[in-house]
Image (tube, rainbow, N blue to C red; front, side, top):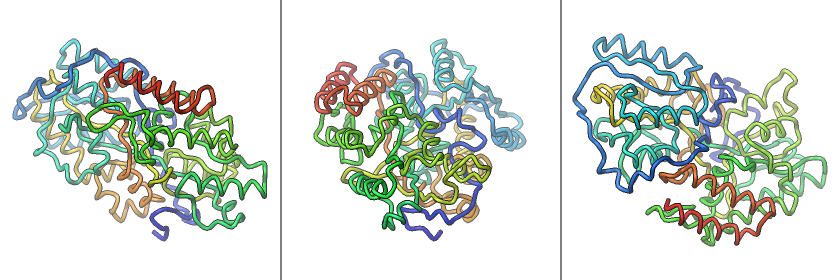
Length: 448
């Protein structure tokens, strides 16, 4: 790698990495990246998941794996690999719908029926608290997994009240994509580390070409806005909830962070149309040559570098870490984790299979063949991965500094409250201070 820890030069021309998309396709973004349920949080579930059921982690036999449809073909290879070595402990894949919400609904139905049909369930990273608190999945024996080898940010998504309920399989984090050619023409040699620096670059570039829009990210009222809010607040030294689960949405750090985005809209550094941006709208505006900067998932790299005429910016872009308010920028984490149903049989086999899936060989093969970031840190140092993937250093750094979305049981209600308040604040429908105070009241009512 010739790039610095913060920036990746567009002259690197590998085209094999479509991180977070590739064979998954852009329709799977919600689950693979910053997905989550739009529905409510199920039952309250109580506060202490430690009182939940336990399983016999020595019991062995056939098991099942319930997850979204495998569009990559790689999972079938892993199952064949395992099943050939464990003929008495085979794993059967149960493919659930592609929609994250439908997957969650079927998993909840299975749990509420106390069915043993699903042994291992693949959970979106935002579902851990709900499934653990409702005692739908069990606490896992930490000594049966190589947890030290997992990227810390990814590992945190599998915990609830510091107990392990799911082991990360894949992960993901956002990056800042920018028009390197336009920065250089305006006299800038480095991408921005803060929003203030980014606003200055936008001004300098627009002074030369007023048709160029500034910065775009996922500011529409949906799950992507929760991702953006969580990340920008962390970059200012705050969090929406503290370590004990108490809301702090009206803290000075949170208010200043959201005000920074509001100021970006008010001053024209963020175009008004960005209030409608989800992942694909952001990508398209950047790929069409209209945006100077975009925050997005790594899948956009290869699409923007396409040489078939679909991209106006191929060969002109650079990649760096996302900007922050005062502290280092942070990305909200995506990904999928493996948990064990509280009603499963043969939990010993389930533990061993999850450990198998988190081993280096499977983690490397998955990342190489599906172009989806995996959770094991050592994979990012492997020569084959480094050679195949652009901006691997930046991606790893973004994951390591990533933000975990609120670990709350009623996640559907909480994320909706965040989206309502933050959208009102950045769109000008309400003042930032009042919106965040209202959010604090709502989150307190929900009880986390």
